[in-house]
Image (cartoon, rainbow, N blue to C red; front, side):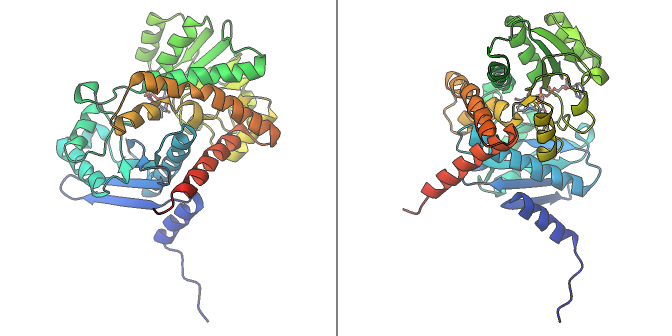
Length: 365
Ligand code: NAD
């Protein structure tokens, strides 16, 4: 009789990869620079895995692996629903960005990216700067989000915010019968890059804008430049608003926040807003709150870097493609209603359908 083998950490990683259906997970280690990184490639049916590099002081290696796996999967669906020929990938570097990053460190990471021969393309994410992208670019061509001065597409945030704004309008059309945001009370959580460009669009449309941030300098800047009312970060979920726009970190839609929400619509730029995709998607639906799936409405940024990756970046083309978010969201909402599912599930189905259909035509010549 063959006895069951005790489960090792390696088999747990494979189990996680199987659960989320990943193609490849690469562990990178370099003694001289102290670099420890994980590159996750989720799916390359539509194109190379693309997604930014994040540096974070993870509490454990397991946490870093889980983050890389979850984020890379999200990129697969984001690019698929945005109609791009890209797969999903993401890299995480384990460590303290303030003390560990330097030229050699980033260039060593670039060499690891290069070793994958274009299966993974990187870009900026949390705790990465354009300078870091320049160092990576010294060692590999497989990097996007370079500064405009280097032929890159520059800051993707204005395009991301435009897509979020259009998603918010489409959701309003569904809920209120009109896509005008004039007079609507909109709370933007996070006055960072995306949040501020979103505030600008909302102000132009005469929405009543509320803003929350944990940093005083961010609040000072946004209140100086725009007509907004400030909400304390811990009062966001209790606020009496029509639309809640998460533009800070992920997982803000959870067991604690959802029961408090008074809004009719959630539409924001943050990634992975639902703490648990199924449970919290359902909870929002039962509460009668229309959720605009994050990976659909925040896809303007990846569309921007996609055209850079293709070597034919054209900002008009990027904005035109981002405008499709409005109609795609309306279709997703209809699909969800017709099939008795959440908008998140419906958006995943639309993305998966494209991956499966395009995958089928990729037959050998
Ligand atoms: P950012 O760092 O410029 O802005 C985030 C802001 O949120 C900061 O001002 C920060 O102080 C604030 N914040 C953090 N925790 C908070 C809290 N608990 N309450 C209130 N404010 C808080 O980042 P960004 O580029 O604007 O991105 C915002 C979100 O959108 C992120 O989740 C990011 O992954 C996602 N996103 C960004 C882009 C893009 O083009 N930049 C594209 C797609 C998705």
